[in-house]
Image (cartoon, rainbow, N blue to C red; front, side):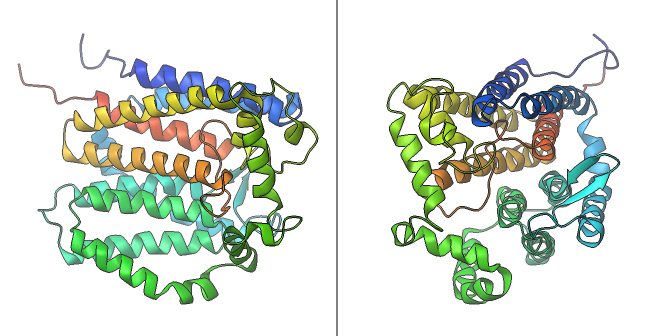
Length: 361
């Protein structure tokens, strides 16, 4: 088959994502109390996302490398437009309207940042030099601060991790990472008072004393634990979760949809879902190890680890192991921008993993 006629496609990744996306529609129907309009809108995004994933898989990785800086600049400009012109919803400016659609601009940085840093660092000699580290950290820090001030601490954290993972995979020394962690701990009072909004500080304080305000700040996580714990091995059944259907559990379509799954489908339902996630991650790591060059390995590794971090934070949040920061469950929670950015991410991974160097005849 010639280079021009080949379709770049990874069946293992595509069909596992196809499966979990349509399972997400099933879960969302119950989480939304049977609201078909929400499910239909999500279904449209899933179909568009699958098409987008296939389209993005086709270009050669060199195309992403060449235009990485433009993609990053565009993402920052879109973020700036959101701050200046975006509507304020519930005290936050996170979306920008394009026609009849609303786009969460920070979602673009989840991809633009790791792709740019991979293009910037892939050809540098090891270990990477302090100048390269400082430039990378300045870009990562700027992205985090701007997003966190929207305010959107959860997305800001994921964007920062997406850059830090690429930096780590590029050959960052353990000594530098230890020093950075110490600096972060020392500067935590400044970050607490300047960067975090009052409601974000309240969420973190609640994490250390949930039972101190069970009817107020601690309500969400207490109801989430009750929902998950009451599911037992096999769950209460589809649409039969008392915490969900009687509206004790908040944000069932977004942040706490995993609690709905735990309550209605129990341990075995959760195990099935986590098994699919694990398969997706294992496939991504395989593609990273077998990618054609360092740039591709950095991009796949960075995006895959970001996906894993998103998943872990979301799960730990709803069971009380981390403060509630507003983290959707990948491919399951309601949200068009987040869903499309995931499909775009896995389209890039597929491109990086399936394109090989053509040997001269």
